[in-house]
Figure 1 (tube, rainbow, N blue to C red):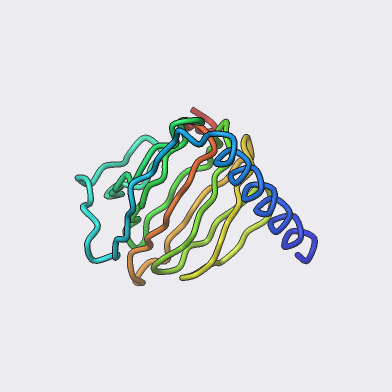
Figure 2 (cartoon, rainbow, N blue to C red):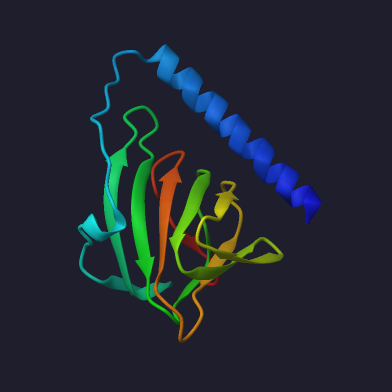
Length: 153
């Protein structure tokens, strides 16, 4: 477990350093200021199915003009399950509401509000939100364009 914490810290430090370098090397990229509360999120219509939790809602916040990676909120209904899948690019997640159980490779973690998760590209992972609890809301930043590769399909 300690090894995983050090790995997550090392990966997040590397991500932050590379993001700062990209920003310094790309002075032409300008970002608009944004401050948003959870109550102000404009959620998309409920979707899901085919491996994604039924009823999941998302709210895109931006696209990195260099990598094509998106940043978005996702809201998973209580009792929902996200089938095992992987993405080509790294994924960085903050839990902003609720509790989820995430399986990263062979390790399972129960995380709640304030938790930070690093999902390296091509790592199999799945999510579960407890039955009877509150909906879970996460913020996701991807290191490249979004893709979903579900296992056993």
